Image 1 (cartoon, rainbow, N blue to C red):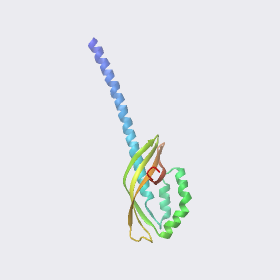
Image 2: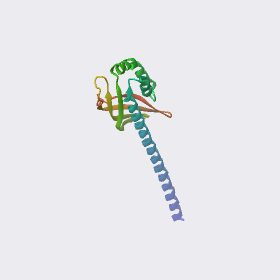
Image 3: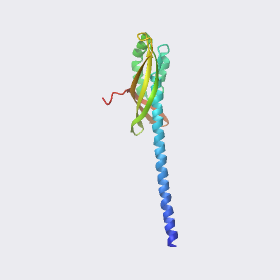
Image 4: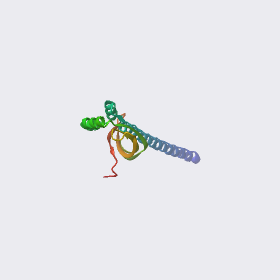
Length: 159
């Protein structure tokens, strides 16, 4: 009888531990999936932001406003005229590729992603395409079922 009680207690304890470990594993898998989604969101946004053609400015702005917070959309609206003038007058054509991206910080549903990318650019002053590496910081927010870019800019090394 004592053996049966001990076996039952041990089985219950193992079941509780298994359930706890299973829950922890599911939470870690969910967190890893969220980090991957934040990285992929930052990657896609970076490529869109580094790729443009002076003959199709509207597509560029549609791309950099897509999947962003209202605040970031407003920032682009504020510089649209100046950027359009520069891109058009210089006849800029550029394409960007992401070489690497990683989540460097997380605060709740806000992820800071460091992105290393290369942009190939040519314009009137530089008719031969030239490549420039760049390090960017992209802030991605998970709101409900949406992943939105909230901030985007050059990584200034903590300055």
